[in-house]
Image 1: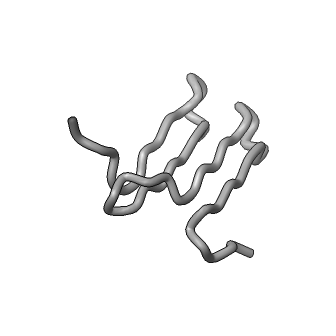
Image 2: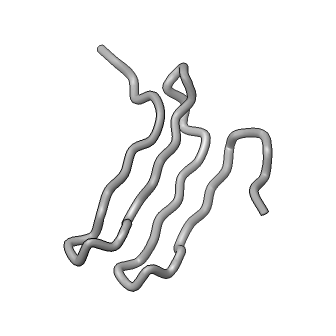
Image 3: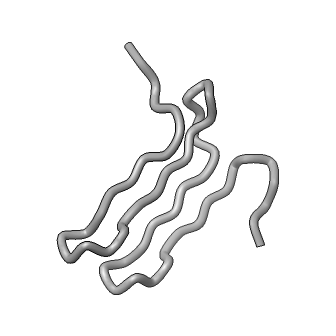
Length: 53
């Protein structure tokens, strides 16, 4: 079975970005961001070892 490597995106029905996941070369999730239908950022989880501003 394969693993997810790189970026994965999901959109709301209105075209707004809903989710963006980033995976490293081993398939581990290093960042997860979720947005509401109106574009409001709901979650910004960073497990990369470097925190974003």
